[in-house]
Length: 198
Image (tube, rainbow, N blue to C red; front, top):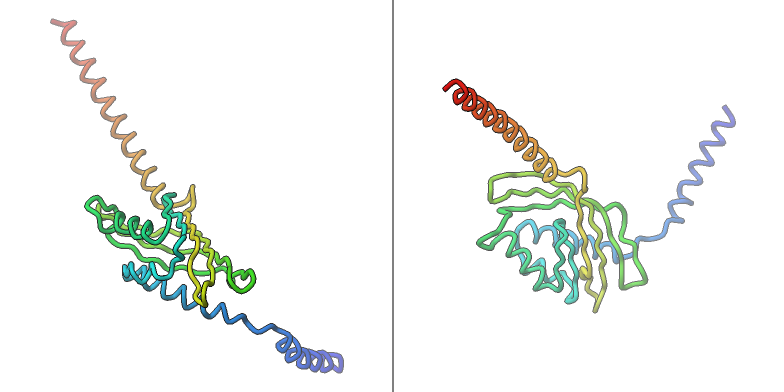
């Protein structure tokens, strides 16, 4: 019993010491959270001008379909083509990113953030699906303002809804082709039998 009391006392004494030993969080992380929140809000509301205001003038973005956009105007052109153009594929899109850990800071003016994202798509065809992707962002601080310098997003190569839909379509097409082949073969054999009898 005495040893348990000693252990409890040591634990209570250790807690304030370890709490005091923790380093204060770098103020940059609060600024980066604000950047992330406003960026996501702008994307989900399709406020392209606000979204572009958070990008570095030399930004490079690699999208989930492996296309690359350079500079904010390249990002604008991509978003317009995908969501607004006459041949646009996507009707609406929302994203809900999460970070794996605090941004890895390099000095006071650069950092790398990474995590996952749950993205919801509605296509012009009427199809809707959700896609889980991984992302990495490089951020730079110029003049006291954090900007996205590079962003890369990718989906699972072997486990995503687009691949599953393509596999279902391929299976359906194979079955239809097989049935059609049997039907044509049956008709040809019947025609051949009639000719032999005639």
